[in-house]
Length: 372
Image 1 (cartoon, rainbow, N blue to C red):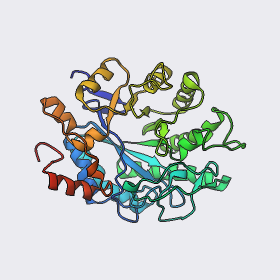
Image 2: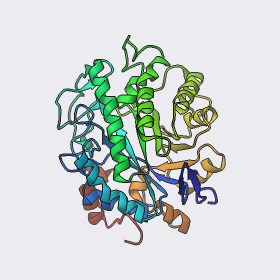
Image 3: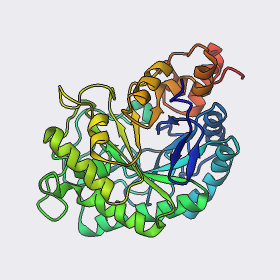
Image 4: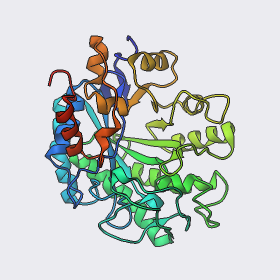
């Protein structure tokens, strides 16, 4: 696997290989959003397992409306910032880099300890049912349309949490504009039905993601890594497609990249499939649109799949999700030619918490890493 185990230069970081742990919600923080020892051990195990870069689960960004799930970790307060320091130190000590994903739940909020009110670009109720394995039940609430003050609070929250991430020792931040959360909702014709400066055609709907990106970049300067995750599908509709097809997708990617991103992280249900029914994949469209590094995520399970994507230069780094959950030492297993354990959804029952994962592993004699 010569490409997979090549080093890669991501701004000032020299990554030991091209394997990335994808961000995955685990609802295992303390009720007040503090990271804990269980989370430290969880992230450390991926670093010890050979991954070069870890992207944290989505961390909420303010104590207003950003929290999306109960027991979601935050970077909104100084106490939350400080709780992440031992987690980051453990990851670095094991040789991996660590990026904090910054997330505002928006209309898909299931649990917020700070406010019962939910906000979004427009008062559009998400379809489907809340995710039981993240603690939700029943249909989503219809959110309130955000006013200017609330939009300003959201931007300020991204900036503050980004500064907290840097102070906690993270190597960068990833702005979560995927999977149907707030920044994605502002991009979306379905959720953003505004007629003011935050809405309109597909270019106009880039206004809030661009405002957040520019504010974060200005606050952090040029030396800190700032990336963004983008998808078509949402939690509430995994098969959703962007309006406008390939050409408008190229403009979206290029506009965001040119505003100060250090990398793009593209995720799809299957990253290899055509983005719009036929033609190129979303990753291929991104690759043709921007000169910055590209992370791809979605359906990558084996080393052979990863190597093929890297060899064909479809992406620079591969982000592994479910296969990483099943094999915290996925890179070491690939390198050693060892077999991979299959992901079992039972690990997420009754909820996708770290304690339930540990209980499942003990009951089924399935260690997260071979050397355990």
